[in-house]
Image 1 (cartoon, rainbow, N blue to C red):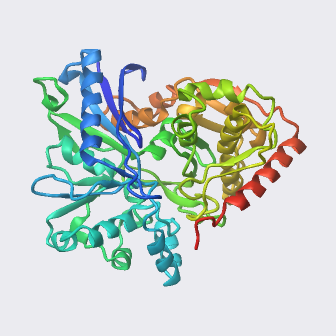
Image 2 (cartoon, rainbow, N blue to C red):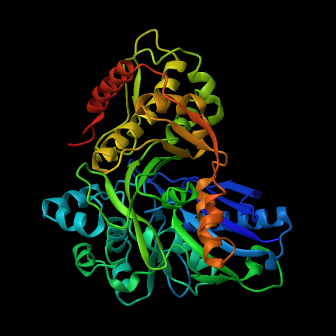
Image 3 (cartoon, helix red, strand yellow):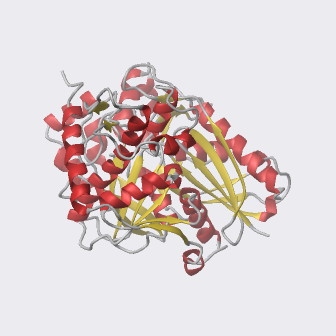
Length: 499
């Protein structure tokens, strides 16, 4: 028996899944960890909580399967992207909480960079827009606001990393300071055409090169893990053989390996990626061009649209408003009404991502009457997720050379039939849910399994199977009317926090 251990470090929880040679999940564990909101628009994580929760679930999954060290062929790692950490190389101690991808504290700095005329350089080199979403400005903030950090960084005493780098460092006992190309591509510091850090971008943000990790491929052995860390004794060190940011891992796990294939992951945010092949084509519609994966020194690219608040709106209905006791109750509450009753909820709690890129937008509910109920608000919340995805895919298809024939979906909310049917209705293309929706972890497992020799490419393709297709059933003119009203609601949410 051979296993692949997939570590999936997300925004609100850490997870570990053990896959067998048939690609079946034989063990899984998950732990949530605390979110910190020190100021409006600021979001932080405790780096030690990220590491301790990830280590704990890895040990739980291995113990559940009673797997021996010599049965674990490799470890694959996937992670929340853009979240930024800085720590002491000698002690491994973080110098500050991690600044989470949702955090907007550097929106003002981004305004300054745009005003200084840096947009064209950033777009051409990185495929990104200048936005507080990405890691580079967060790292600049840490260097400027943590006492002594810049001096220590210049002296080579501090290490920067996204979450993959932080976990690699800890899993290897501080021996490996590296990131993979997909995560590096989200920093606003990487030339995605060369797959290397860019001196002009580093100078633009005043980032000392000494803090940067090495850039490695997505499917290669980047380090070795002592099995004792996982609570299993004996045996050889376990190769850590696959690393990818969560959305790229999901694209790979969905087997969107040909240009024109697209997927949407419905997680805390929603992330739409479309494979565009071996050329980093610039978007004309404010999509991002990013690295899909790097295998055998060959870069594959994708267009991406990032929606900051997806499933998090359901968490807000649960924790903020108390409309539901658990996230799973949202579908029944939304189905208690036949339509949204004219209510639209724009979940711009942390600004709007693609295609609007408005950091000053704020959450808005419009269309309320005395007849509006909790059911209408719940339905509007789910529909708001689908409308945002439709906005992104409309812009993305305008960039793509080939039409999208279907959307492959995954993530927690992909299990919501009401949402998936509405998504198909407003997109006007089938929505396909795979038999196994754990495609982010599967992608990490596949990347590690290929690098370790457990699987070949054709074997991995055979592991993906559809569970259900949602065909559009709504009249086209009705879908168009709903989208027009949604667009009007978005306009009312925009620029709300701008002074």
